[in-house]
Each structure stands twice: as structure tokens, then as C-alpha cells.
Image (tube, rainbow, N blue to C red; front, side):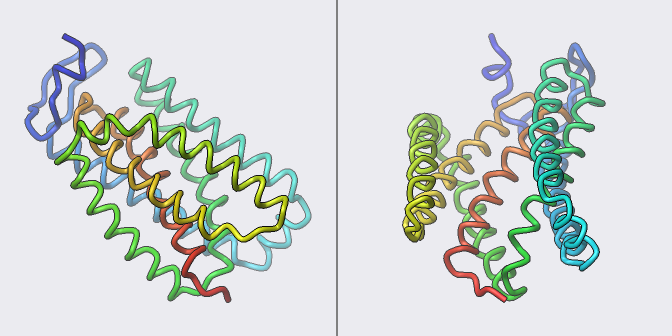
Length: 232
């Protein structure tokens, strides 16, 4: 019996020992998962505050290439470290990867927020929270459906990325693709909530799924902001 079949969800699990450490309780696993997602948003907010200062903007303007390369390397490097830590059941590597990813990706996304009013950001956050609540619950209620559509959603996202690149070079508005991306990431939210609820309840897994869900949520949030936000 593999781990996915053995652990039908953290809600029903009690702490037990495993090669690599003690498993978390259902309550601790779910609380940690939610807390890590919240921390990622808080870090993004702090990065947004810092990146809006004249000193930061001046520094980035003087080192635009270095900033871009550094954030990209940090983001992907953090994800790789988390995957390695998860596979090796190394909490230290997973934590370092999470910290590096959260900070570098926080700076990347915070730059996009600078163009919008605080009211627009608050409205988009509330709308995103509603979407997450609905599709997170749907992922738990209809796991087989989201497991079946995962491949289609992934292919659809790749296709939209290609279309957006073509439209960008042609100078054509991308409002329609924003809507399509929101719909696709609603599918990802349901699927990732389902996967997190059926995997082994460890800290490394909580870190990994927190980042996956954060990426789902932030993509919905940024697309809603692009569609309905008022620019300063």
C-alpha cells in the first residue's frame, strides 16, 4: 500500500512515527498549512511596502538586470531546495527553500502591486478569498473530479501562456486570457487542496503544499487585479 492510499486525509490521522520523524496531528498539519500561506502573503505585503520606497526603486533602477536575475534564481532555487528537502525528508532544507522562495517571489509580485490603488488590492483580495473558499471546499468534496481534470488544466495553462506571449508581441489586450487563467487556477486550487488533504501530514509536505497553493492563489489575485483594479 503506497502512502497516498495509506493516508486518506490529515483530518483522520493521529501522530505516529515514520522513517524521518514524527507525523503531525490533523489539527497541527492543517493549521501549519494555513499559517504558511498567510505568512507568504504577509511577506509579500512587507516586500510591497519596502519596494515602494524611493531608495529601493532607485537601487533597482540602477541594477535592474541583477534584481531580475536574482529574484528568478531565488524563486526557482527555493522551489528546488524544497523539493529536495521533501524527497530527503530534510526539514532544514525545506525551511531554507521556503524562506528563499517566499522572500524573492514576494519582491517579484510586490512590484506588480505598486501600480494599483489600495482599494483595488483590498477588493481583489476579498474576491480571491471567496474563490479559494469555494474551490478549496470543492476540492475536498469532489476529489475525483479535480484529479481527472488536472492534466487538462495543466495543458490549458501552457496553451494560454503561449497565446499570451503572442498577443503581447502583437500589442493586443489580454483581458480574455486573464479570465481563462483565473478559471484554470480555480481548478488548480481544488486539485492542490485535495492533494494536500490526502498526503502524509509532515512539516515538509505542509511547506510544499503551502507554496503550491500560494502560487495558485496569487495567480488568481493578480489576474483579478489586472481585470478590475484601478491604477494609481
